[in-house]
Image (cartoon, rainbow, N blue to C red):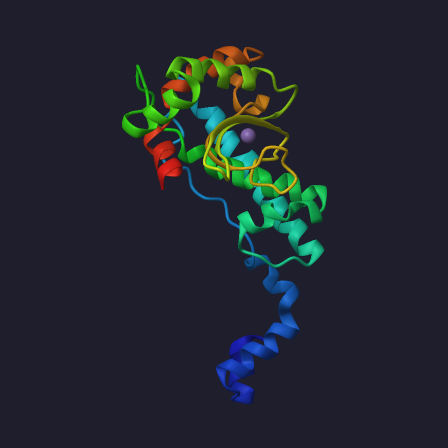
Length: 233
Ligand code: MN3
């Protein structure tokens, strides 16, 4: 019976109808419950030539979409109902590996798109952000070296991060697979303000096995305005 027919036949109030349908149709309605793929905040060729259009299309439209779809499927299968991704990450140790991997994948990529923009030469942070980086790491180039070293040192797939710790320190850290520092099981916890995906799918079409070259070029597309907003609010 369709909802409209049900109303015509029974004349029940919308609230009563809602309550009765909840019970009757919740398995079907679950498909609308959870998470959606956010659009890229720029066209897929916006990061050319640092990150090529095809890589962005596949990375966003296939990989990120896959994390969202598989997360929703896993949440349905496990009877978990939430719209709060960060809350899910903060208690992810209680969840299955499928939820952990796909919830992380969804958060990480949603974040990653926002901290990039079209390439600029001599792309550097400004103002307070520069001061914080200099105070913490000695200089911007020291910070770049340390961040690159961390990203190069990841064996296999993972992410390198600059995070703000709970005690308000800036720290470089890495996570394997799709883990991130928001997860309760992360060794180093904090709020990411910058992060780079070093899974091969993020760079292989253009850079093949040359992760180092990808890391060097990537500085041109970092959106320092967004990094500053995430650090200072
Ligand atoms: Mn990726």
